[in-house]
Length: 184
Length: 405
Image (tube, rainbow over all chains, first blue to last red; front, side):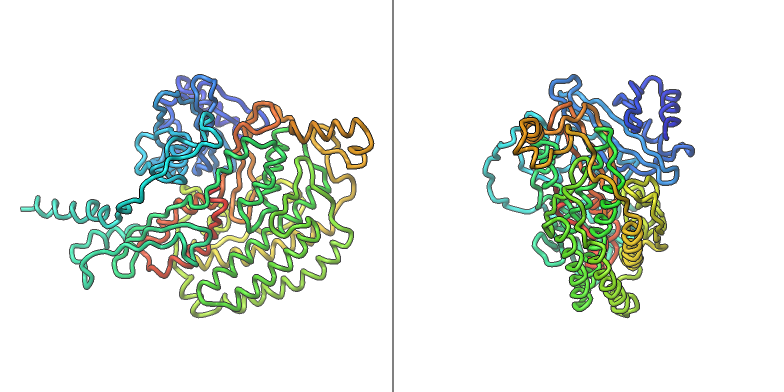
């Protein structure tokens, strides 16, 4: 189906594409982390491919492998009706990757979940908070070295909730005051 | 568009009567926040200028549990993903593992999966429309819808033995065949469903209050919706005819004739209309499938995948060993990875599976449609009124079990 997309990828980014397969009818490209953002933008903006939907982002922890993690992107083109999967290897030492939130909006929450569950940071993500777990949670539960029966330390009651009014003030009111001050 | 209103309001130098903005915690325990989800709302008067949805209150480690269960033991967990249409989750997962194994379910199995899947979709849409109407004050519409859902659940109970946590699918087939009198039972149920659909239509579609609350609220554009990863009725309401049943048919969907209803405005009212029309299509699909239901075997004939019949387990050593190996070691799925997707009641339900060649999944990721709705709901809410949150939240039909896993 999207064999053309794979061939196009290899021809355009020979330095970033590590491998391509199409086993079981799923086209897959393994992409070097350095080329991710460029390739994502290219895949979305090339009219013949038009991958305008990022269906899903997840990660796999291959504990024994090097590099340890692999971040997996499922792409779909609503107009062309074809799919493509990108797999990006990420090392075990303070794992991080470029965020694709600037390309697809759905990456926002999906990347937050990958950070929460696997501890992979996304550089350039606008709001990288935990999403399913609470802020004080220790560790990343879907890593293979996180035991099934692991318990978490007791935490104190929060003295104060996250304050949306404070956030609002710093976002808008303070900026506005500064802008006014700057005016002659 | 809504974003622009919110930004303009937030940056407005004078605040009017109220000096400061107000923060409202909606949920996690609020009757209109189905499941448990919390929204931190920043309000200017009654206008929402910032909405921050927080999920995770129903998180139970679905993926972690699945990594420690055999391939067949995952079925009960999938029941609890979208608990309004558990059958669709069962079948979606079964299809994913079958893709991995490289096997195809039999014709009869595909037809029965289509029938039961559409019944689950009907139940889901009834729940969604009924609850939506209830929260806008239409108690009677809700009671009719729940009655219709109960008729469907009675049928589901007849087939599977359970009403909600059915675990009916098996890898390579189904637990058992349809009961002999299923077609007659359906004949008796179908007019009742039509009756309720008609009543829902009469009670809501042209209801002044309902229209005022649904029209032009929670609007989203097609391009934004695609970029946000929206699928299912929510995306179709924006005019994009993306339906996996049509675009990449599975089960028996390529052998039945049905329409994909689309909206134009992408607002709550369109989402309601799309769901109402989809229910009619579902009934038509079920009728066509029952008419063309082929005979032949129900399950694939492969002792490495299907459990042997009980007579063999108790009376022959080969059957006993076969049973033991499948239960204790699990089905041996070849190493590899696969992404399989089906059209669940709310949209694209995807399973990304990685196997290392053993009886347990190495990684099992669910792509829940509602998770992405929640990721984009702030764009539908911001700039609107506080009261618009209720219909918007209803028509995206968020299911906590699926979002939080």
